[in-house]
Image (cartoon, rainbow, N blue to C red; front, side):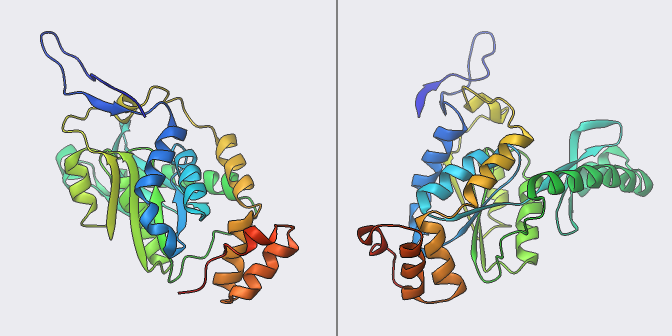
Length: 270
């Protein structure tokens, strides 16, 4: 992790120093260490595109877990699209900030038009990222949802609801950085919330990264394609979870050419 920096300076005073990550890769490694106790549960790690996917990829690698995504999309205010009034996720999920919608005087027709606009973009992203590949099954599984930061939390809430509808047994939301109030609110939604840094003063997620350049669609697709080529952990996952048998898991690893010393590390079923 990079040295602490002073963020958001104003004349004559400054916000308290906060830890700053070099990039999403470093943030993912730090988050993976914080999530180490979950490795034995054989979780599915799901990143929130775009920026959450490179973070999630490093988490999945450290935990020896499968990597997937949950595609979410902020619903923008009809006359100020950058202002989020809620979020949608694949599977028909919609989560709304009812208080803000009422304060802004957004009518039902305007809300539906804004939602339809963002549903079209959500569908485009699902096609772009997944192609013909189905989402990993999460029924009765522990799912760790990962994003590169947490601000208002509505896209995270939508992601939690999406995997719950698909049958996840337990949902953990994990992120490198989030403000204290947002962490408290997420604890009402997720079964657990894991955060590396919870700064008392928080303006924007990008303030806590030295490199917060935008993640492209192509990067998301490349990370998923690499993750879907099973390594030792991937073959073990197939044998243990799909077939429910230690020896099947070890034989799959042997067939893939892994040495016996590596195969012997495949854990027993609990």
